[in-house]
Image (cartoon, rainbow, N blue to C red):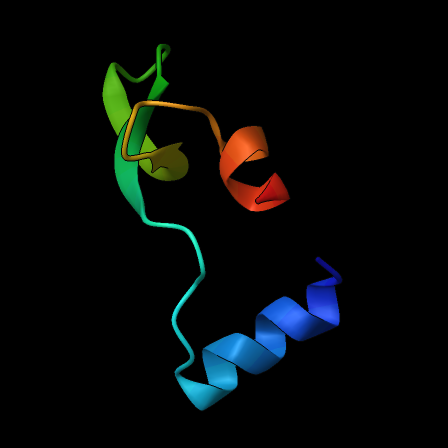
Length: 56
């Protein structure tokens, strides 16, 4: 799917054609022993990774 098409779908509120979930994983600064931020991980409903979800 071209990036532009994905952006257009977000703008119009069109549903993504494949069900998915997201998990937020902390990014830890080990030197400060503190959470620095989070990364969003896309997962299929069956646990498949982002590559499989976005290739659909």
